[in-house]
Amino acid sequence: MKQIFLVEDDSEIAKNLTLLLKAEGYKVSRAAGQAEAVSMLEKARYDLALVDISLPDGNGFAVCTEIRQLQKIPVIFLTASGDEASVVTGLNMGADDYITKPFRPRELVARIQAALRKSGAAFGVTEICGLSVDTGSGLVKKNGREIFLSALEYRLLLIFVSSPGAIITRDRLLGELWDAAGEYVNDNTLTVYIKRLREKIEDDPASPAIIRTVRGTGYRLGGKDAEK
Image (tube, rainbow, N blue to C red; front, side, top):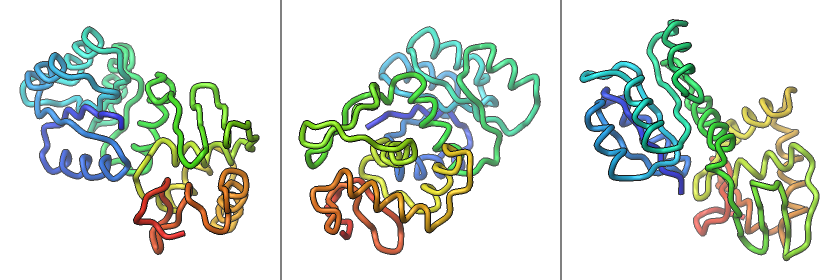
């Protein structure tokens, strides 16, 4: 499970972000200011940092500098301003991305996943019910034999693999597949892709154990609480 380092002084925003990220399968550690952030960076390792630019005892730029000195992880700036100078400064300091408040939860999650994939922190092998997904090489095997997926089928599988244990809504799947395909993906198309993917990776597509349906909500990668 990936560890997100959140540096945000607004307790309400921090609370909402923590709930969102935990629902997506991430662990979250939060610092409320620059001094606390530096202290936490010296004591623990993280996979990605979300850093607010404006802090009560300093600023996110200084935190970014500390992160770059102590840990090699992606940094995404959170800013309440669309000020171009701040954005340029952050990127020039080595930030991987930025997002302006208020932001759409789905967009933030997509940015985080993209940053993790780009950095290689999300690479690894996921194994479930005889299925092996190597996100570093893009190799997918079922019971030791390679299976071939279309670009959208693979993208769909990656969404589940990147959020183990989390319930993934159809709206999120539609949004991410649309972004990846560069074309409109509607609800009927999503149903078709889910069906095709299950036919390739499940032992029994009619009774799926890997991509399971959560009634009235969406889907989940495995899990006893889901419905087939």
